[in-house]
Image 1 (cartoon, rainbow, N blue to C red):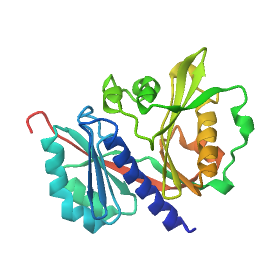
Image 2: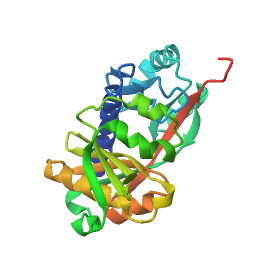
Image 3: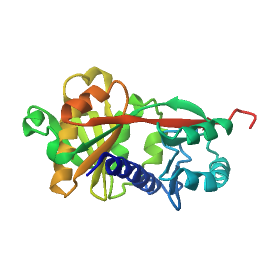
Length: 256
Protein backbone atom coordinates (compact mmCIF):
# COMPACT_ATOMS: atom_id res chain seq x y z
CA UNK A 1 0.00 0.00 0.00
CA UNK A 2 1.54 3.31 -1.07
CA UNK A 3 1.64 6.52 0.95
CA UNK A 4 -1.08 8.23 -1.11
CA UNK A 5 -3.48 5.39 -0.36
CA UNK A 6 -2.62 5.60 3.33
CA UNK A 7 -3.35 9.32 3.35
CA UNK A 8 -6.70 8.87 1.61
CA UNK A 9 -7.61 6.25 4.21
CA UNK A 10 -6.96 8.82 6.93
CA UNK A 11 -9.31 11.32 5.29
CA UNK A 12 -12.04 8.71 4.97
CA UNK A 13 -11.61 7.74 8.62
CA UNK A 14 -11.93 11.41 9.61
CA UNK A 15 -15.17 11.50 7.61
CA UNK A 16 -16.35 8.35 9.41
CA UNK A 17 -15.61 10.12 12.69
CA UNK A 18 -17.93 12.94 11.58
CA UNK A 19 -20.70 10.40 11.11
CA UNK A 20 -19.97 8.77 14.46
CA UNK A 21 -20.05 12.09 16.33
CA UNK A 22 -23.33 12.95 14.63
CA UNK A 23 -24.83 9.83 16.20
CA UNK A 24 -23.54 10.72 19.67
CA UNK A 25 -26.38 13.13 20.52
CA UNK A 26 -29.84 13.74 19.00
CA UNK A 27 -29.11 17.33 18.01
CA UNK A 28 -25.80 16.54 16.29
CA UNK A 29 -25.80 16.37 12.50
CA UNK A 30 -23.72 14.82 9.74
CA UNK A 31 -23.70 16.46 6.34
CA UNK A 32 -22.47 14.32 3.48
CA UNK A 33 -21.90 15.43 -0.07
CA UNK A 34 -19.98 13.90 -2.94
CA UNK A 35 -16.45 13.86 -1.52
CA UNK A 36 -17.19 16.16 1.46
CA UNK A 37 -18.21 15.32 5.04
CA UNK A 38 -19.07 17.66 7.92
CA UNK A 39 -20.01 17.29 11.59
CA UNK A 40 -22.27 19.81 13.32
CA UNK A 41 -22.25 19.69 17.13
CA UNK A 42 -24.47 22.41 18.63
CA UNK A 43 -23.37 21.66 22.21
CA UNK A 44 -19.87 22.89 21.32
CA UNK A 45 -20.61 26.01 19.23
CA UNK A 46 -17.23 27.65 19.91
CA UNK A 47 -15.02 24.59 19.40
CA UNK A 48 -14.02 23.94 15.82
CA UNK A 49 -12.32 20.63 16.66
CA UNK A 50 -15.77 19.05 16.98
CA UNK A 51 -17.29 21.01 14.08
CA UNK A 52 -15.07 19.94 11.22
CA UNK A 53 -15.17 19.45 7.47
CA UNK A 54 -13.20 16.79 5.57
CA UNK A 55 -12.90 16.73 1.78
CA UNK A 56 -11.35 14.29 -0.65
CA UNK A 57 -11.18 16.63 -3.65
CA UNK A 58 -10.69 20.41 -3.60
CA UNK A 59 -13.29 20.96 -6.31
CA UNK A 60 -15.89 19.09 -4.24
CA UNK A 61 -15.34 21.47 -1.32
CA UNK A 62 -15.64 24.50 -3.59
CA UNK A 63 -19.03 23.34 -4.87
CA UNK A 64 -20.62 22.98 -1.42
CA UNK A 65 -18.74 25.60 0.61
CA UNK A 66 -21.56 28.15 0.82
CA UNK A 67 -24.05 25.44 1.78
CA UNK A 68 -21.71 24.29 4.56
CA UNK A 69 -21.23 27.82 5.87
CA UNK A 70 -24.98 28.38 5.92
CA UNK A 71 -25.59 25.10 7.75
CA UNK A 72 -23.11 25.99 10.48
CA UNK A 73 -24.58 29.46 10.87
CA UNK A 74 -28.15 28.15 11.03
CA UNK A 75 -27.09 25.67 13.73
CA UNK A 76 -25.59 28.41 15.88
CA UNK A 77 -22.00 27.25 15.35
CA UNK A 78 -19.58 30.14 15.84
CA UNK A 79 -16.36 28.24 15.06
CA UNK A 80 -15.79 25.49 12.50
CA UNK A 81 -12.78 24.15 10.66
CA UNK A 82 -11.73 22.55 7.39
CA UNK A 83 -9.01 19.89 7.49
CA UNK A 84 -6.54 20.79 4.72
CA UNK A 85 -3.54 18.64 3.71
CA UNK A 86 -0.46 20.86 3.58
CA UNK A 87 -0.04 20.27 -0.16
CA UNK A 88 -3.44 21.83 -0.93
CA UNK A 89 -2.25 25.45 -0.96
CA UNK A 90 -4.99 26.57 -3.34
CA UNK A 91 -7.63 25.36 -0.85
CA UNK A 92 -5.89 27.12 2.03
CA UNK A 93 -5.73 30.37 0.04
CA UNK A 94 -9.40 30.10 -0.92
CA UNK A 95 -10.41 29.56 2.70
CA UNK A 96 -8.27 32.50 3.83
CA UNK A 97 -10.11 34.75 1.37
CA UNK A 98 -13.37 33.59 2.95
CA UNK A 99 -12.27 34.55 6.45
CA UNK A 100 -10.67 31.33 7.69
CA UNK A 101 -7.46 31.49 9.72
CA UNK A 102 -4.87 28.78 10.25
CA UNK A 103 -5.69 27.58 13.76
CA UNK A 104 -3.39 24.54 14.06
CA UNK A 105 -1.24 22.24 11.94
CA UNK A 106 -1.16 18.79 13.54
CA UNK A 107 0.88 16.07 11.89
CA UNK A 108 -0.84 13.38 9.84
CA UNK A 109 0.63 10.22 11.37
CA UNK A 110 -0.05 6.92 9.66
CA UNK A 111 1.06 3.36 10.18
CA UNK A 112 0.76 -0.18 8.94
CA UNK A 113 -0.36 -2.34 11.83
CA UNK A 114 1.91 -5.25 10.95
CA UNK A 115 4.90 -2.92 11.40
CA UNK A 116 3.80 -1.25 14.64
CA UNK A 117 5.49 -1.87 17.99
CA UNK A 118 2.58 -3.28 19.99
CA UNK A 119 4.21 -5.55 22.56
CA UNK A 120 1.70 -6.56 25.22
CA UNK A 121 4.38 -5.83 27.81
CA UNK A 122 3.36 -2.20 27.39
CA UNK A 123 0.16 -3.07 29.22
CA UNK A 124 1.93 -4.49 32.26
CA UNK A 125 1.04 -2.74 35.48
CA UNK A 126 -1.66 -0.60 33.85
CA UNK A 127 -5.24 -0.78 35.14
CA UNK A 128 -7.20 -0.37 31.92
CA UNK A 129 -10.52 -1.39 30.42
CA UNK A 130 -12.45 -1.08 27.17
CA UNK A 131 -16.08 -1.05 26.12
CA UNK A 132 -16.93 2.24 27.79
CA UNK A 133 -19.70 4.56 26.57
CA UNK A 134 -18.37 7.49 24.59
CA UNK A 135 -19.65 9.93 27.20
CA UNK A 136 -17.31 8.46 29.84
CA UNK A 137 -14.29 9.73 27.91
CA UNK A 138 -15.41 13.27 28.73
CA UNK A 139 -14.24 12.78 32.32
CA UNK A 140 -10.66 12.77 31.00
CA UNK A 141 -10.80 14.39 27.56
CA UNK A 142 -13.05 17.22 28.76
CA UNK A 143 -10.56 18.87 31.12
CA UNK A 144 -7.49 17.95 29.04
CA UNK A 145 -8.92 19.67 25.94
CA UNK A 146 -10.48 22.51 27.94
CA UNK A 147 -14.11 21.58 27.45
CA UNK A 148 -16.63 22.21 30.18
CA UNK A 149 -19.71 20.01 30.51
CA UNK A 150 -20.37 20.48 26.81
CA UNK A 151 -18.33 17.48 25.67
CA UNK A 152 -20.33 15.09 27.86
CA UNK A 153 -23.53 16.67 26.54
CA UNK A 154 -22.38 16.31 22.93
CA UNK A 155 -21.50 12.61 23.40
CA UNK A 156 -24.24 11.38 25.72
CA UNK A 157 -25.29 8.61 23.35
CA UNK A 158 -22.90 5.75 22.67
CA UNK A 159 -22.62 4.87 18.97
CA UNK A 160 -21.44 1.28 18.54
CA UNK A 161 -18.53 2.37 16.36
CA UNK A 162 -16.96 4.38 19.19
CA UNK A 163 -14.48 1.99 20.79
CA UNK A 164 -13.50 3.61 24.07
CA UNK A 165 -10.62 2.77 26.38
CA UNK A 166 -9.85 4.16 29.85
CA UNK A 167 -6.90 3.76 32.20
CA UNK A 168 -7.37 4.12 35.95
CA UNK A 169 -5.23 5.25 38.84
CA UNK A 170 -6.46 4.47 42.33
CA UNK A 171 -9.83 3.57 40.83
CA UNK A 172 -10.33 6.82 38.94
CA UNK A 173 -10.06 7.34 35.16
CA UNK A 174 -6.91 9.26 34.23
CA UNK A 175 -6.35 8.52 30.52
CA UNK A 176 -8.52 7.96 27.46
CA UNK A 177 -8.33 6.73 23.87
CA UNK A 178 -11.09 6.29 21.32
CA UNK A 179 -10.73 4.10 18.22
CA UNK A 180 -12.88 4.14 15.10
CA UNK A 181 -12.53 1.29 12.60
CA UNK A 182 -13.35 2.23 9.02
CA UNK A 183 -12.60 0.31 5.83
CA UNK A 184 -9.48 -1.36 7.20
CA UNK A 185 -8.13 1.70 9.02
CA UNK A 186 -8.12 2.28 12.77
CA UNK A 187 -8.47 5.98 13.51
CA UNK A 188 -7.27 7.05 16.96
CA UNK A 189 -8.93 10.03 18.66
CA UNK A 190 -9.27 11.71 22.08
CA UNK A 191 -5.87 10.59 23.35
CA UNK A 192 -5.69 12.33 26.73
CA UNK A 193 -4.11 11.98 30.17
CA UNK A 194 -4.91 14.07 33.22
CA UNK A 195 -1.97 16.21 34.29
CA UNK A 196 -1.17 14.41 37.53
CA UNK A 197 -0.94 11.05 35.70
CA UNK A 198 1.17 12.09 32.71
CA UNK A 199 4.46 10.44 31.70
CA UNK A 200 3.49 7.16 33.33
CA UNK A 201 2.60 5.21 30.17
CA UNK A 202 -1.18 5.26 30.54
CA UNK A 203 -2.08 6.65 27.10
CA UNK A 204 0.58 4.55 25.38
CA UNK A 205 -0.84 1.43 26.99
CA UNK A 206 -4.35 2.30 25.86
CA UNK A 207 -3.13 2.85 22.31
CA UNK A 208 -1.38 -0.52 22.32
CA UNK A 209 -4.60 -2.15 23.52
CA UNK A 210 -6.71 -0.35 20.92
CA UNK A 211 -4.34 -1.13 18.05
CA UNK A 212 -4.00 -4.78 19.03
CA UNK A 213 -7.80 -5.02 19.07
CA UNK A 214 -7.93 -3.31 15.66
CA UNK A 215 -5.48 -5.79 14.20
CA UNK A 216 -7.51 -8.65 15.58
CA UNK A 217 -10.63 -7.12 14.04
CA UNK A 218 -8.98 -7.09 10.61
CA UNK A 219 -7.70 -3.54 10.32
CA UNK A 220 -4.49 -3.15 8.31
CA UNK A 221 -3.59 0.49 8.95
CA UNK A 222 -3.95 3.19 11.58
CA UNK A 223 -4.14 6.98 11.43
CA UNK A 224 -4.25 9.95 13.77
CA UNK A 225 -3.59 13.68 13.89
CA UNK A 226 -0.78 14.51 16.31
CA UNK A 227 0.16 17.59 18.28
CA UNK A 228 3.83 18.45 18.66
CA UNK A 229 3.72 16.99 22.16
CA UNK A 230 2.15 13.72 21.09
CA UNK A 231 4.10 13.06 17.88
CA UNK A 232 7.22 11.55 19.53
CA UNK A 233 5.05 9.13 21.52
CA UNK A 234 3.31 7.95 18.38
CA UNK A 235 6.61 7.64 16.50
CA UNK A 236 7.86 5.24 19.15
CA UNK A 237 4.84 3.03 18.46
CA UNK A 238 5.69 2.94 14.76
CA UNK A 239 3.63 5.77 13.29
CA UNK A 240 5.22 7.71 10.44
CA UNK A 241 4.87 11.45 9.85
CA UNK A 242 3.16 12.24 6.53
CA UNK A 243 3.17 16.02 6.84
CA UNK A 244 0.81 18.52 8.35
CA UNK A 245 -2.95 18.38 8.03
CA UNK A 246 -3.95 21.95 8.73
CA UNK A 247 -7.04 23.17 10.54
CA UNK A 248 -8.38 26.27 8.79
CA UNK A 249 -10.90 27.76 11.18
CA UNK A 250 -13.70 30.20 10.53
CA UNK A 251 -14.68 31.93 13.75
CA UNK A 252 -17.57 34.37 13.71
CA UNK A 253 -17.18 37.67 15.48
CA UNK A 254 -19.88 38.63 18.04
CA UNK A 255 -21.58 40.98 15.57
CA UNK A 256 -21.87 38.40 12.78
